[in-house]
Amino acid sequence: MTGIDAYWGVLMRTVRRAIISGGFSISVILALAPAASAAQAGVAQAGVAQAGVAQAGVAQAKPVVLTVGQAASQDVPPAAGSEPDTLVEPDAAADPEHPGVAVVVGHDGRYSDGGAVGITHAWTRDGGRTWRHAPVPFITTAAGGAWDRASDPVLAFGPGGVLYLSTIAFNSSATDCRSVVLVSRSTDGGATFEPPSTAQSTNDCTIFNDKNWLTVDDNARSPYRGRVYQFWSYFVGDFAKQQVRWSDDRGRTWSAAVVVTPDATDTQASQALVHLDGSITDVYLDYTGTGRTPDREREQAEARADAAAAEPGVPLRARTSHDGGRTWSGAVTVTTDVGGDVPGVRCCLPSAVIDPVTGRMHAVWQSTDLSLLQESSSPDGVHWSAPVTVNPDRTATTQVINADVAAYAGRVLVSYGVRDSAVADGRYVRQRAAFSYDAGRSFPGRVRLGPISDLTYAAQAGGAFPGDYIGTAVSRGLFYAAWPVSSKPPYGGTYHQVLYAAAIRP
Image (cartoon, rainbow, N blue to C red; front, top):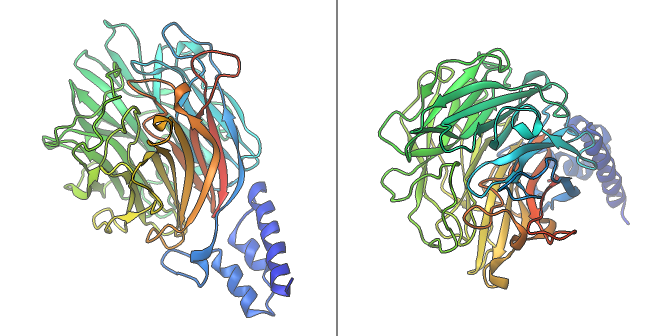
């Protein structure tokens, strides 16, 4: 073994320990690098390259899965009509100041016609080596709340380590037309949650509040630092617009609603990204004129087993606000090629994120070619790059099952599931992660995550239902991914779907 090989081994073992303990930083690497060798210094610097600075050898880097395992399982008793032992549709968040602290949430006990018995949360303090989980309190009646069902959990950390959780909630009675968007707050890194505030509420049988998204301005230069933005899809019948409210007192009170998509458009699935200067860009699906319609959470049990593999593409649009959400620009187009559900599976909303170091935005989506996963990036929310293929190893029979993106200092993680329709009728899904080391221009880093998932035992919502989305997060270069895994029930039964999580070093 050469001297530089020995140095590299010691360095990597030290960095790995530092990442898991929550103490990883650029200064750790630089402090370890011997000044005597320019080659050694170059190796150390390559690990912390910023966006757009392609260091020699970075393209050959290989991601390392530091931890992977089950993060959560059923926490609430099954209710009549629900699907016991099903955890669905996770989101993830990592404390930006403490890389070892991360939180995952998901539906617990899915109903085939919309919502779940409860929302569960799992948290780690050691970089994913161990997880604890429990029901989120005060939302559904299963955990001391007021509502029969809840859905679409979304997480975001804000200044001071305050964690926010957004959910929608509604009752199962056909004559009860109330629907709400709730925001719960945790001040201990996701271990406990306070009773939620109500950001949006309606009591009209023609209106439903759906597909919520929450983000927090945590930028030191922003005039709106600390502002919590709550987006949702405002359905009137089957037609939806994107709306937003915000809170400047950590989710206690909320502004009046503002319509983000005021034109005669049919939209869904906001992914709101706060720029370093406090501007905010909302990336969303625009179904207008496509012949496809957005899904509404309540009473969505239509059959999807025969879904066409070549549905028309749905445009992904972006609008930007420079005044804290009060007014919004006209729409720009990211792509017109967002695909739909794969045959027999309900899944696959796009994902978008902003790099907190470089300020560059990244969006990923499944194409109308269901085997193709693509990414585009933007410095400002207006000018978007040509699509980049994330999974060049795809085949004619593979299909993408959900994808999510996270980014930090020019490194971009895309976590996604893959199934092969030519093997056992596509019942098996393998989770993967792809990394870019050049701000999304290419994705050479690739690893497999966790065990294979068997959709035979997944939740059902007009088809196998891993969820409409999965979760990724990053803190100071430590990346997390969360996704559902279904397998044969250990003690009999129809369903068995739990949440898995991984911590990855790029």
